[in-house]
Amino acid sequence: MGTGAKPTMEQTGGGTAVADAQFVWDDLGKFKAEGRFLEGYPSDERTFFAPRDDIHSMLVTLLGSAQHSIVVNMFGYDDDELNKVIQDKLAAEHVFVQMSLDRSQASGVHEKQILARWNNDAFGNSIAIGTSSVHNAISHLKIVIVDGVYTVRGSTNWSLSGEQQQDNELSLSRNAVIAAETRAILDLNHDFMLKQMVGSKLDVGKLLVPQAKDAMPPMPPRPAAATRAADAPAADDR
Picture 1 (cartoon, rainbow, N blue to C red):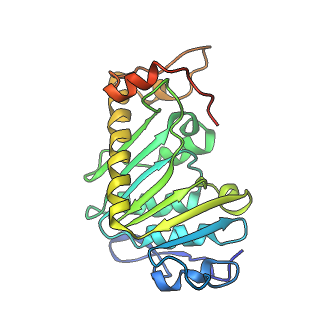
Picture 2: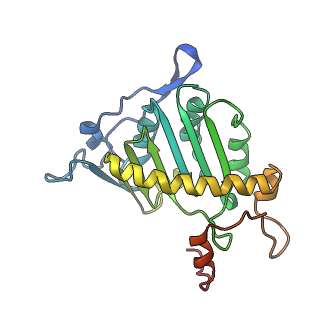
């Protein structure tokens, strides 16, 4: 693991928890196993690898730094400490939180316990659970955008095994153009999932993995691009 100490959480005024460590771009080397990035690294990008780097602590610090918004599209969501930071942001009326989660992962026992503590009805929160817009495929992205500037992408699910045990990559960008492009895609995915939830009469249970063979959640009309893609043979989920 990296040399940076894992941030702890503490309660501050107003009941909002924040990470002890500040998120400072030029100090992110402390989360690398080597304690630094190679000379000549792109100025607006940082890359981390699990299990050698301290990805978990970096994510805790980044999410804790959010002042305006957190937008998430996540396949595996099973990290209690990251969820604690998100919960505190959900409770903060000055921070907009948008989350899109894959229905197959959101149906896990631990995931259900996490989701049960959220308050989706609070001001500034929008949470959706669903699928890809084509063939009810999984929503396999592992992306978070913080404050419209920082974009996290890669193969790393939000779980301790994904962050600390599996071979995974996580790239962090501070390029606002990349954040804007990525946000448009995440918003489209979120919109589709919300329409799925409306089609289910807001019964999230209908959106979780069904027990009956070949059962599917209710689907809104496909976007034109998705309809064209649906005409092609379905590929196996990887």
